[in-house]
Image (tube, rainbow, N blue to C red; front, side, top):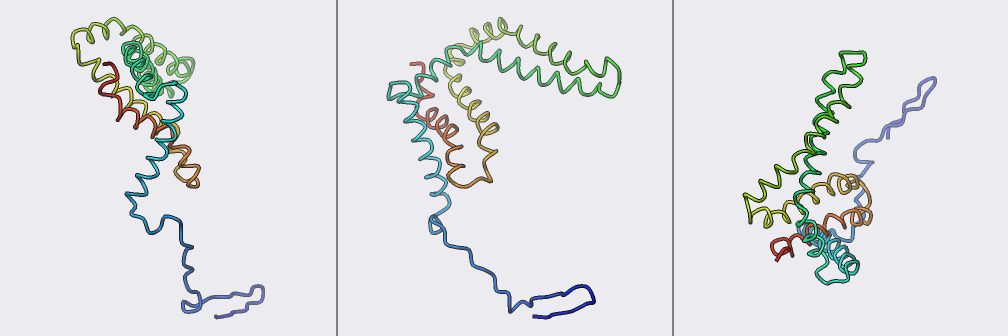
Length: 193
């Protein structure tokens, strides 16, 4: 240890041999393969969520019931997603006119979002016709698309926000996403049959 004294400060410097690195405390899962840890983490979260879903549906095929109900309404759900997506795109396009100033600059984003959303809302008949022409594929693909969209939305809105939290909090936040993935893996191909 080196001590240097100036007229206002006392400076203490530690040398390398005097400051050994502290070894981290052993964790509960340190000796387990990371892939097995990841699988156990997600499987337990999915099992808890799926059991709650099954109890809420009063049916052991809990996830399949809701997935089948949502798949029947594929056209309205598609219109909803398209309307939301076009509204966001219209808002973003309106931001380019922010620098214009005045009333045009202030109203560009809301008017762009409203116009795009109205266009998206009017695509219902077109999507109905497209789904009728492409039969039976929309009915077979709809459960996977719904489950995939739900999984992405859950990851974006819930799961990624808890990545830096403690293990138990991350696990609780993973339950909705793991439940959707487990339900889709078990019942998406045969949800409508």
